[in-house]
Length: 112
Image 1 (cartoon, helix red, strand yellow):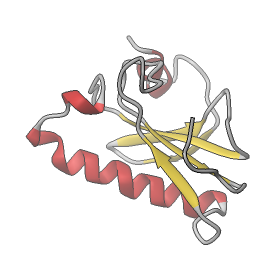
Image 2 (cartoon, helix red, strand yellow; image 1 turned 180 degrees about the vertical axis):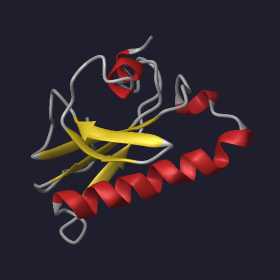
Image 3 (tube, one colour; image 1 turned 180 degrees about the horizontal axis):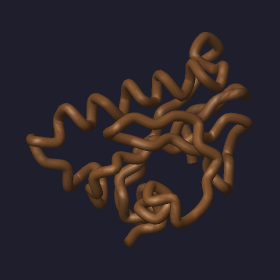
């Protein structure tokens, strides 16, 4: 099981922000901004580059989950960033697709 599967199964504690039947959102343990929440699908998709056409609705649900997280954490109106990492060069650290929602401070560009 991935770290995120263990969190979804409640085998590892997490500070949960929101949950649906399709995804779980919780605070990142190494936040890179005052708001740093992960939206993780309950279905294991190792990375965004391995998503399949049948995952289309789930992928949309993850983005709506990011919107809900932004609303719940108070950054919907001030601004936030949505990030999905893929592979080692992309910064992926857990082989389970997840969406980072970052906000609560000005975010520079380009990132990294």
